Image (cartoon, rainbow, N blue to C red):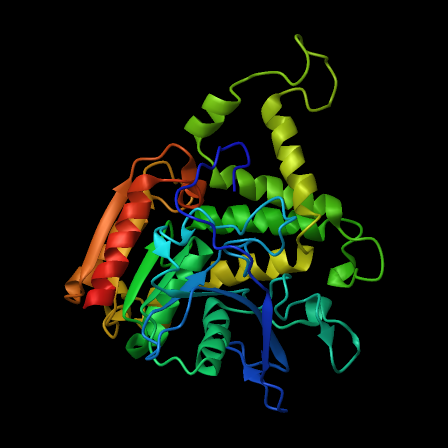
Length: 387
């Protein structure tokens, strides 16, 4: 998220929330992955807000993006300086109203915020997996989420909602479990990565693997590849912004000086900002998780997985009502990609609404306060609930 955006909020806070854990696939067979590998056991970190109604029909599943986690809203303790990553949207009276809905958000497998991933202990070696961890797909992430939903004995989700890589998971849910999803809101996302998106991810991964501390991913008992991860974050962060947002905020302003220094330091404010983002990222994220999640996003191809190359065929088994949202300044997942999925949905006579929101903040816009998005989601969910 762009830290320099002021996040004004409406509605009440979700209050104090708790990170919880669910472990499954403890049998020798474990969780079978799309690669053919098996993972056992599997732990999912998750958070809930709101109350589950008696017939379990008010459930909304929130799906996070690359560096997100299960902490979607509220605070872990009264001393927390910041709430969850989507606190602007989830809470009493907000777009996703926790007075009406039971909201679940789980940390994806291969991440590093409580769910099983490369930093987890491999029970066969009693050491962190590192790159012995099997490659994960978006489908594998959804399969693990389905196990959590089954644990709650929830038969159908009122809605699945997510942006970016979270939006990919939304589309995967609707295709993989069409009878389990009543409505869906994919935000600022795509049905498959473009060559440009794959290229940026690969450069970021190479930055990590070129770090002398990477050690083929087995660095947990030594120095970590912090410099590589910081550079990877800087590369990724550029794709989350837009030319207009960077021009308005930074332009060519110098950092703490009135003239050029003729040195290789952070002379421009934008340089200083990116370095700050990189340094802050290494405090909370794992380099291997970055590799695994970006690779899963690159592998994602809805038409290839479900339609033999046809996006229309890929949506043919879907039954969800859709609200698709894109942003004018998102050049990572531009609007034409959202329009392609909307066209394919309509060819299957699905109930789909589409909105392109005018926003200058780039791909990050779905994480920032926006009254239009708030009202769109609120109205869409109420209609889905009433139906």
